[in-house]
Length: 162
Image (cartoon, rainbow, N blue to C red; front, side, top):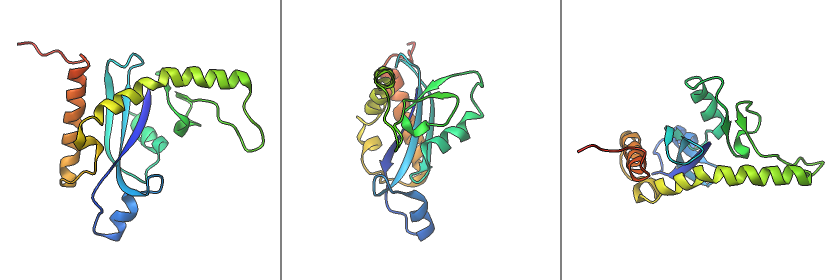
């Protein structure tokens, strides 16, 4: 399962940086993170951190795809439509609606995909990963990776031996 989330950040000072980090979807300057999780929700497999907010989800995926197995199949939301390795829900076109069977299949996919949304919610229970990031940009990646490590420990993916 793969999905992305955005986190607001301080407004950059230079115009080029502002343009790069401005997310038209959220109308803010943001960092974008992508999580790849197991279908059971018990393991965070991969985290892509600190992409600019203007970067699309599928572009982040295509950059990371080269490091993953070619025969692996993934599930994603409508942001990943057109990617052959990701099973996405059906999307209605302007000219025609989706059929009842396609709608039911889309609902089944959404029920399976909710696992990644729950893990994103767990990451955002830490205020530093949910609210506007006020620290230096260089500190963003270590902080988010530490939060993901704490989440893995909380869900039992990491067992510490004493």
